[in-house]
Length: 301
Image (cartoon, rainbow, N blue to C red; front, side, top):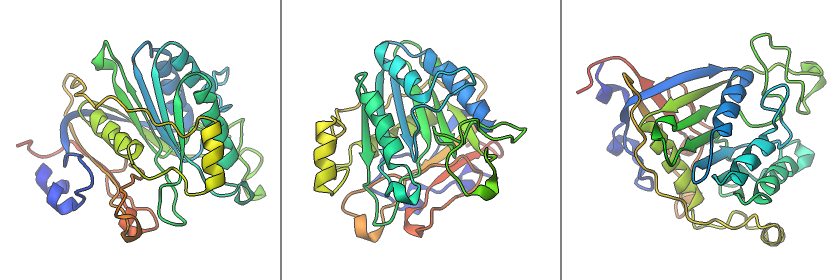
């Protein structure tokens, strides 16, 4: 099968609001099954960040006290430590609906505040269609002095409670509130992909397009004032995505597609989730679908 028969072309994708290329070649895409596997690798990568390196992340729910490994550090502490070492830290977190609905408003604000307190920036974002949400779950790490270590983690695993489970499915010791039918420590099965190569810049481009959306993060005047007082409304410019090094012998072609805005929001493009699945995965509103596809078969012409 030809790559052209597997991926959508720019014309077929039909989203002129995005500057993403149709696909890229020469990537390495490695699945990380279970949150415990992903969190352990993420911790190791975060600890290697230093001055002028770049940490970008987007999340649906973020719990700053979620431990990346059994002995820590926590998500908030690991990101704060990277900022204190001089890394540039930027985050996009869905603001969410009311906590009465058991979504994530308070938790996301706490994570954003912890990052802001150490010199990073995190935006609480509601730039979606009415009733929609941002379900992006990715982390991008770029290295100022060694581009061979650049990586993007893309998939379905939030940086929050209940996600650090493993193959035993005994559940995360830090469970999120869920119905009693799931037990005191609900099991959680999910996957994240570790992506290296040119596709890292594509995931970074998705983040930049959403970060630079000119619409306000919220239309609620009370929330806008609270964000301003808490320094959660500043969006300093980001470095432009540069070309990551191609890993040796990497043979995977990858496609990262940005959301096409719905009819009600066409005047201000926003991004949605990219998922590491071999076929397209859509959110409930068809106009807000997104795709992460990879291929290792067929001629690369």
